[in-house]
Image (tube, rainbow, N blue to C red; front, side, top):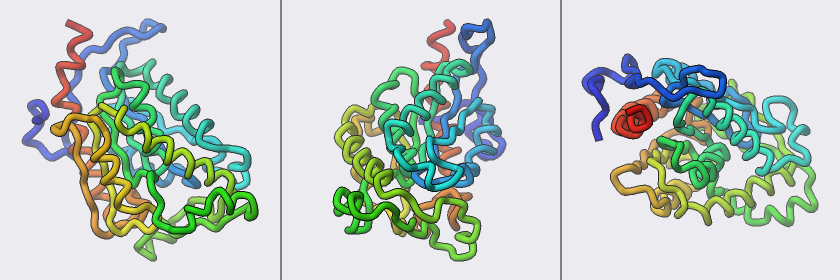
Length: 278
């Protein structure tokens, strides 16, 4: 599918086609499209900030919420799990809908799971989702013991999510996490995997074959099991990045992949945007 008249220009200088949106409850004109950006488990917002300049360049209103217990101290994750993270993301999406008629969701790691889950409930208002290293299946065999470990170990050290040692120095994620909180993330992955056939929105699946936290089978499973039409789903593999794909050595290429997908896929959905306004 081709984007609009901007398709011959580099993505870095393209903007989304502009249409008049509907009117919100405050009498303000809404944009046709906005973006919801979601971080992952133990993450700070630094893990997804690379997406901000891109969505701003495309002229999209956006929300980048801090999911409950994050971006502060790891002990704030005590007693927090996926229902709270989902609720925070959903609240941000509903807030975004006050500014935009439709949305795309860009989710990293557990944020990718939330993007998939939201896609099962907001199909009509989502123009697409992109999952980046979605935390559907974990690489370490220890994760199979999560229910047991959560009863005997109150905390666990976070694995290194970078493959570049120099770039790893900028890691601002929690260095440890409450095991019961991870148990919730682990259980959420199983729940979302069961829901994959309910996902029908256009989707971009991004993963790294060198991810030391998530197994490559996670991305393949998402791509194969969603019900999105074949011509509206895409999987892109990277060969060097660690789990923090938006900060590690291929970050620029990852962001460009997402931007190109947004311009092409969402540009191709212009009839959807136009349908509400004649």
